[in-house]
Image (cartoon, rainbow, N blue to C red):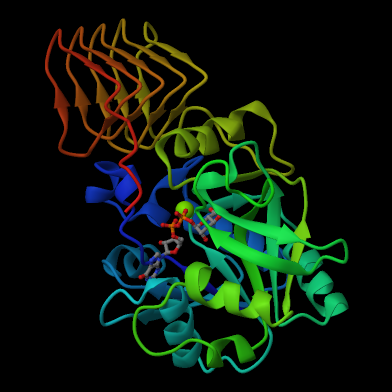
Length: 332
Ligand code: GDD
Ligand code: MG
């Protein structure tokens, strides 16, 4: 089975990290999130993934130069301009000649969903489109469904105003489509969530498969951090990671607690790192403190970084305090 994975967004909510690395190439437990996602799709029977790219395709091509990620073959569909989610799916599916049932995934979804079970449910429903659903406490920043008892989706609303959500069941970003979905997508910029899903739901062809699997959208700062730390705590079904990369240099008099320390990171004597992710090549210098943060750049001696993101070119000056710079940007 083939899959289209959407990786062409701008990753604005993870700026400044995404100024240097596209969101799906950011590491989760020392591996690019796209590699974890492709591996999961492969485990569910996907043999070929088409990466739907728009913005900066080079880092993907460099990371997978032989066109494979594990056992899965990779091809690339590079959009001439961002076509939004539905436009990108159609462009990628047409470039790969997809003409059979196929899987689609958002490139920032980290989950333990069994993709083969989603495909089996899709066939059992006889659906045109089946989407994976997850129950959450605050659904308003996601796509939300109104579902009938037989699993059919009566209505799909993208990012409803708080208080106007039809349920707590959200679109978890993995889909199975019949090729007829492609014929519903007009030329140009089209959103699958705002245009295509409501149309298929109205026609009675859309179904939902709700599970209570581990699930996180790693495209938001707090969740990107959690996606990393959750690999340390054992909440993932079959996945975990080393807290400290063997390629990192951590001084014996540094303190690391509940944190992921990436490749080639340097942590100096007296520094403390708590509940944080230090991305590849980050430096935390002597007696600096990093807490609940995501750091790619340099934290100078005695500086304090709390609830913040520091990009690849970011330098927090000696004795300075950086606090709460990780506030997500408002939705576009
Ligand atoms: N190729 C391409 N072109 N990809 C795109 C484009 C585009 O123009 N625009 C967005 N994408 C990709 C992003 O890279 C991401 O992998 C995926 O499409 C979804 O975009 P996000 O920006 O991450 O959307 P979201 O998180 O606000 O909402 C989506 O995911 C939620 C679950 O995580 C929606 O699908 C919601 O309905 C859903 O609940
Ligand atoms: Mg997202």
